[in-house]
Length: 128
Image (cartoon, rainbow, N blue to C red; front, side):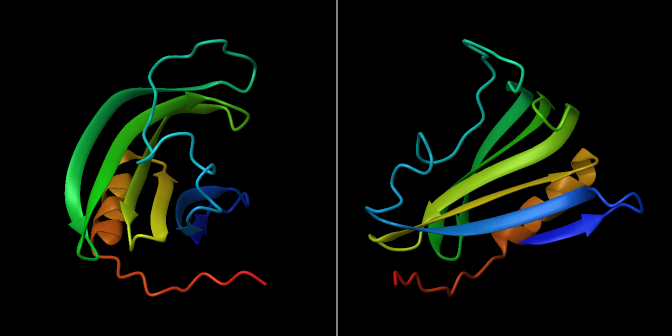
């Protein structure tokens, strides 16, 4: 995880990469690969919705990755068209990689996506 904070202390840019072991972590994401949803069925106070969704496929760490960018609004954080991304790819038959991030503006978000595209994930999942 990486984050840059504003002087007020809250994150203005954030990047996270998570390794998911299969089958143990298969329920962490409701669908694979991760994606944004522009609909808000049964929406409550913490509802988040996306607009301006752009999907792309890319090679990340030698694997086919699915990456989506969008502007998100709502939620507990009170986003107002905040620039965000989600990405997912298979590292192996037993490990998936999920990445997400946000930025104050779309240009910085696109820089974070470029970082993800150049990622080399070398982690090993261990269960104690």
